Length: 501
Image (cartoon, rainbow, N blue to C red; front, side):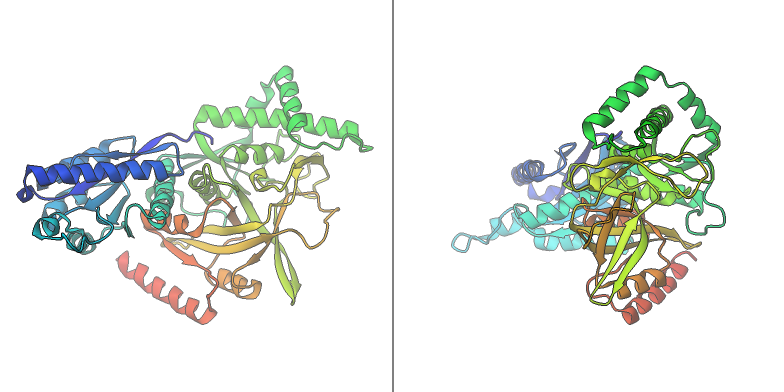
């Protein structure tokens, strides 16, 4: 994964000094046990749960929250009320905490010890009402947070915390993340652009444009031995149809693509970028539209958006981070064309060239074909079908007064028939609840034609990320009806209009 730093989730247990040193030592020991279990259960080896001292006073809470806010390696905080912790002492600390946080509503013991329970046990194990006191003040303060309820040893609890941790990691990664735009967005297109200043305020992305000449300077500096080394890597990783009659043209196009990849990779590395965009309308000085380079950079964790679509580039990067280490992949995608047979209505997703091979079923084929747009030489690209399985299709749109995430769970399937004449990577899927309803709902919500499609990220991390960022998230689910969605969108419009006044 490109440029993904390690991080810590701080675990802070709340109590009060009235319980005495012996009880507080037991609270701390129980917290340490929970942290050890979370570290064993996490699917993110780059993240460590760290047990912090139990807080019992307003000053201790404020110091703990201030330290979490200031610590670069802290990406989020888990709070647990082991006993009763009066909520007023949390106000000043929660007010200054700028990191995402999760309220774990659990208790150390799984079961009530029926035969031995006494008031000492009751006084120590007060999560049931201690958590309610804590939750009340968070709601009264209007604070966004994740709430997970259940016993700390349960797999369901671990899964929910793991999903939120991935969202917290993506949020941390986005703060100050630089997105490079090679050229501008596609002319006259509405959805690919938006308010970059508002996006930086909301998501943390820093979006800046660069002329193609800035990139071609890097490409011109690529040495021939470096190009040859990358060609050898291509030959080892992909199927290349060298027996084609146009094999000389194939080799030349692949060599040009390798030079573009090296130059683009160095530009992004030197500038500290985590995502980028291209557009076929800004190719002056390039021999071909970057296809292979984009696919391979996405596979290494970079976010990408075509035609200058920086919002999707940032979203793809965020979902790459959330899916780190999970089976499957994440890619820039576009709903390209439909199969509208009433018995099996399907979406064929693709793009001109740029679909990430992390989705591929089997070994991609490295091919060169004409591209009937862009007026450049035939570009190299990886061709493959996406592996079947559950996925989520997500877009981010700028509605003017706010941003909206739109998510639709889908099922990727193998194409019902071969596609021998389609020279691009593609994914075929059935959207929930069905194509007619999903497309209607997507259009009604103002969804874009560019998306991030992921088989590595589920729906819950998307919802958690939306909550952390404080943005609207519309989900088109298996039980979605158009009439209910219309009501939801109207309610949302009213809510966000009043919220921003």
